Each structure stands twice: as C-alpha cells, then as structure tokens.
Image (cartoon, rainbow, N blue to C red; front, side):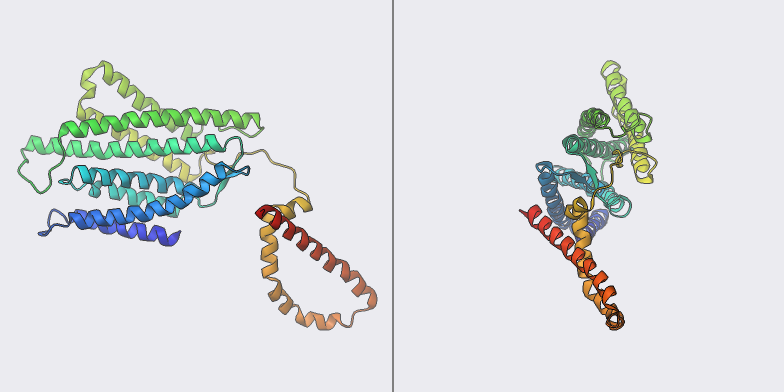
Length: 358
C-alpha cells in the first residue's frame, strides 16, 4: 500500500507543480498536467478497486465486516480527483488542478499518517448500514469540498470584475453564473448525503441498543458538529428559498465556508480520539475456550507464528538438550505429554485451516 500511495502522491504533486507554473510558462503544459493527474487517478482507482472487492466480499459473506478508516480519506481524495478531471475537461482555460490537488494531497497525507490503519469490526446486522453511513458521510465531505472550490473561484472572479481585470486571457475562469450553480448544486448534494448519513447513524444506534452494545451518545462531539453542519446548510437553503438576497453568490460562498469550518472540526475530533464515533462499542464477551481459540483466525495466526519460530527455538534449545539426556526416566516420562499436547493442537489448527479454506 505504501508504494501505491507514494506513486499517487508523486504524480499529483507533479501535476500541481505544472498547474502552478502554467501562467508563467511560455510553452503549453496543460496537456502534461492533465496526463499526470490522469495517471495518478488510474493508480488511485486500482488501489481503491482492490479495496472495493474486499469490502464487497465482506458484505456478502456471513463473517464480520472489517472497515478501515484510511479508506475513507482515500475515497474522498479519489472523488475530488474525479471532479477535478471533469472540470479540467469542460473548462480547460482555468487551472482547477491548482485548487483541487492541494486538498487531495492533504487528504492522502491525513489518511496515510494520521488515520487509524487497524481495521475495526462491525457485526453482521450492522455492516450494511455501517457501509451506507460511511459512504454517505464521504459523499457529504466531497460535496462540501467541491462547493468550497467553486465558492473560492466565484469570490476571486467577483474581485477581478470589480477591479476591471478582465484582459488576462491565459487564465479565464468560468462565468459567475456557472460557478454559482456549481456551488448551489454541491450544497444541495451535501445536504442529501448528510440526511442519509444521519438516518443511517440513527439505525446503527438502534441496532446497537438491541444487540446489547453501547450506543453512540447524542452529545458526542462528532454527532453535535454533524448536526450543526446539517442544520446550517439546510437553514441557509430554506431561508434562501424564501428571502431572495440570501441566494446571492457571495453570501452562498460565505455560508459554504462556515460549513467547511464545521467539517474540519468534525474531522479533527475524529483524528484526536475525543469521540466514540468509529470505535468498538461492543459489549464484552466471555473468554473463548481453547478449542474455539485454536479454530479462530487469531489462534491460527498464532500457531503459524509459533511454527515459524520453531527452528530458531530448537537451535536455542540445543545446549539444553545435552543436559536433558542425563535426566532420570521419570522426568522424561513427564515431558512426553507436553509433546503430545502440542501435536494435538497442531492437528486441530490444521483441520481448522482446511475447514475455513473449504
């Protein structure tokens, strides 16, 4: 995984450098920048495609669903890159990669260095709703970031128009009407994704209560910030439908920036660990017996680890075997059941491996 993430980051960084140098370059570099972004996007897609196959198999199996928080950040970064490529294709006169790729690189860095790489388990009843919850919040984050980019370009273009800077033809941003529509559509899509995310979160809490697990408290910082972001976005859209001046492009852009603050706050709380969101809240279970431990994945992994370390341990125990030769007959007889017990556990673990593979 480290190699793929490294290649993706390198390609995106090179494309960002070419886009930033685009206004001062005498020869066209747009085609090379698009090629870099496309190459990074393909590698990114291959990595997430593998992860998607794993998740799909888990959703359709009878076992537990193992979710990885890193995939969430990598998925948002992939969606931003897809929007960046689309906007670069439809609006080639403006270097959108210079605005999208910094966000993409930040998400890749946060996912790789700060997000928890250890999978956390979901029960069989909640794995589908947990998948819906994660994807919907991922979509809401993506839409808010797209709205931020559109709002930033809108405010920059308004400032250029006010100052009369309209003759610079190398960088031609889209029209104000197009930017305003893009911002409004992204905000509406974010509200829809947040609605689905909140609904699926309520269902997950209900499932946790029925199964005896501890539910996520409603005063959790991530829950509070998510509700605040949803209320703010929904309130601005409703007020804008009634009070026409609130639909003006600059006000909508400023409202979107405040929603971005709520988003950053929620992500920071998740990374800091001051929340129960995304943590294991299952009720403690009774310790498993020796036979169930041997047939479990953890027991099989421990047996394989012990088996691999066997030659080294036998080499270390060689000097002791010389002294064991002088033991009395009774001591050697007492040592035999230990060897038989280890062989019995080895046979049990091997049978469990064959049963699980079948």
